[in-house]
Amino acid sequence: MNSPKSQTVIVAVVFAIIAYIVAYIVAPTMPVSSTLVAGLVFISAFIAPLITTTSPTSSLTSTGADTAASDEDARTLYVGNLPYRANETAVRELFANHGSVLSVRLMKDKHTGKRRGFGFVEMAADDLDKAITALNDTEFQQRTLKVREAKERPERTDDNHQED
Image (cartoon, rainbow, N blue to C red; front, side, top):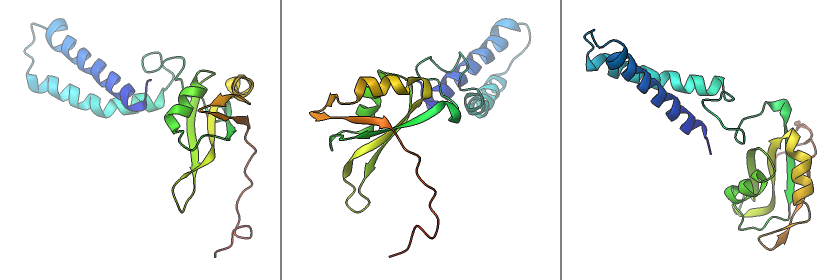
């Protein structure tokens, strides 16, 4: 899995290699101090996060399965009847077998902190139907999942939400 942190590390390492090549191979006749090389690597630590956040789909920093989709290409699935012991990682792995998973949110009771048995999986729109077909009414950790496209949540206004 290529997370944003690992992408940043990869880009920083690439910058370090470039600094080494420039300092010791391309310009061996020029006197290069270790301070200059350290400075180039240090600067790369600031540039790397900018590169990985502005171009998440570049071939250097991502793989096909982990490519981030834009907001309009992402859709949300409702996943019901989840086992209470299921965690985000297990659900992500299950859905990743059927497409690109962007996020997983398992809902918890705000008072007890225990899982409520349902959640939401955000996936690439192209993979949505495939995941629904493959996973709806299938068994996961001894529970039969209910998977469908999530309905839009109505906007909350002060009239709809009253304080206790």
